[in-house]
Image (cartoon, rainbow, N blue to C red; front, side, top):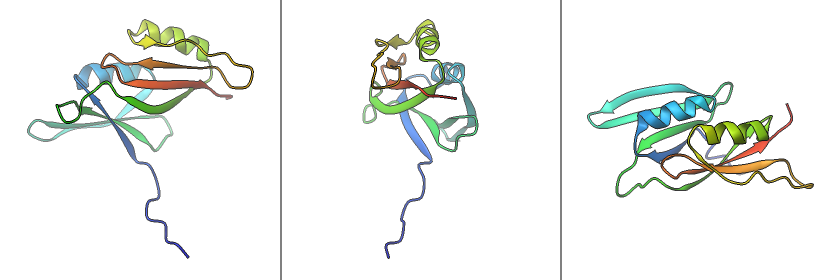
Length: 125
């Protein structure tokens, strides 16, 4: 019998140039701040999560060895992809084409002001 070593994804770190700017953006997307503190001089830990979700997004300060502008691979859910597509564009993000395929739910990608790419998929309520 194999013992499970890891049991959950707790947080996913995304490097950003301006933690306050990014915090404001992600709060507008529906995330809530769970933790925000300077753990040591010059090192701020900032976690946001969706209501009811255990996994959080940690907005960490970008630096030369941890640059921003990554493809995060993070998939976010929405009940209305068309409305989300328009709203995220209005927030100043670069929004990709709304993909409307017969065989898949509506989806699109967007890049935050730091160039970090996220994906949004429509799900049933």
